[in-house]
Length: 195
Ligand SMILES: Nc1ncnc2c1ncn2[C@H]1C[C@H](O)[C@@H](COP(=O)(O)OP(=O)(O)OP(=O)(O)O)O1
Ligand SMILES: Nc1ncnc2c1ncn2[C@H]1C[C@H](O)[C@@H](COP(=O)(O)O)O1
Ligand SMILES: [Mg+2]
Image: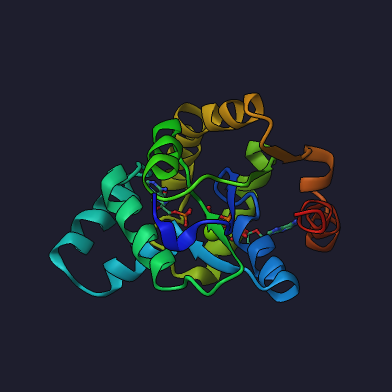
């Protein structure tokens, strides 16, 4: 455990690709002032650095697969320790598998709560195809989107059940998660107002 992070609020943001994790995190940061760490953004920064490791990560991400747990956990840990003055952390896109959650909690700190956005597969596909027209993301193409959705179902869906059993899950149900970003955020605020 990292003593510097004791007592900090740590919220995992979980949902399929295109479920709106990043969109909601932007709003949470603006209203509540948490530190936003997106595992995907950290990985894309490594790719953009042009390093050899970045090239390996890019190939994995283009296949829609998960990068090794140790790589992403070390990146998140380093960023958290560089921001210990933050009142809390939004860990966006992590954990992607149950073991990631367990390793985080045993080596960094306990998660306070897990926010889950439940969005239908076809809605996510449509959002990501549209985002791909301007995002420049190498994984916003239909083939990789389908592979990422498959990875989500196989590896990440169990994360939702794992934290539900622990009583830490705050779920944005589909009827809300598929409404406008502002309507989703109104529900998200119910969680953050009581933290
Ligand atoms: N509630 C919403 N209604 C309609 N479009 C939305 C909504 N929320 C987000 N979007 C748009 C914004 C983006 O273009 C796209 C994906 O949202 P985004 O927040 O980037 O998802 P995400 O962070 O979960 O995806 P990824 O896992 O691929 O990073 O959908
Ligand atoms: N937590 C993660 N574990 C493994 N791989 C990850 C993690 N977060 C992101 N990745 C990889 C695999 C994803 O398809 C891409 C893009 O992530 P995103 O959160 O959709 O920006 O990066
Ligand atoms: Mg995102």
